[in-house]
Image (cartoon, rainbow, N blue to C red; front, side, top):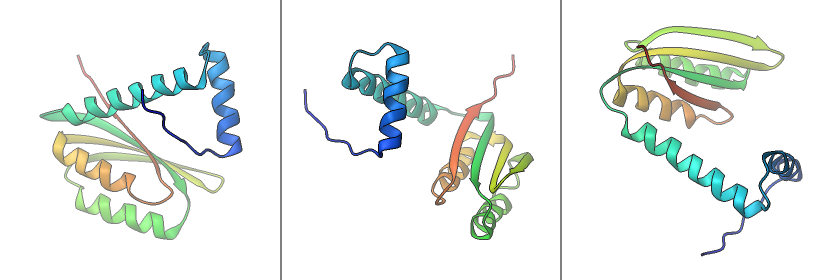
Length: 130
C-alpha cells in the first residue's frame, strides 16, 4: 500500500484524535482510510445523480460584503431553480439554506460555483419525497 503524507494544524489533529478514539478506530490510518472511502462514496453518489431533483444547499460564511456580493450574483444567475432562501446571522457568520428544484446538472453547477467562493462552508443534500 502506498504511504501518503498529511499536514494538519494542532487543533485539527487533536479533534481528529478525540473522534478517532471515541469511534473505536485503533489507528490513525484505519480512521483515515474509512474517511477517504466515505468522502469518495459521497462525491461519487452526487456525481451520478440524474434528472429533475429537489435539493438543499447549506452555506456558512463570514458576514463580508465581498462574499455576499458573489453569492448574490450567483443567486441572480440561478433564480429559475431557487425556490426559497432562509438565512440567519449569528455573530459574524451568516447561515443560509437554499431550496432548489430543477435539473440536477444546473443544481450541481450552482453548488460547485458556491463551493469555490473563498471562506464558504457548503454542503448539499437531496430531498426525497415518497
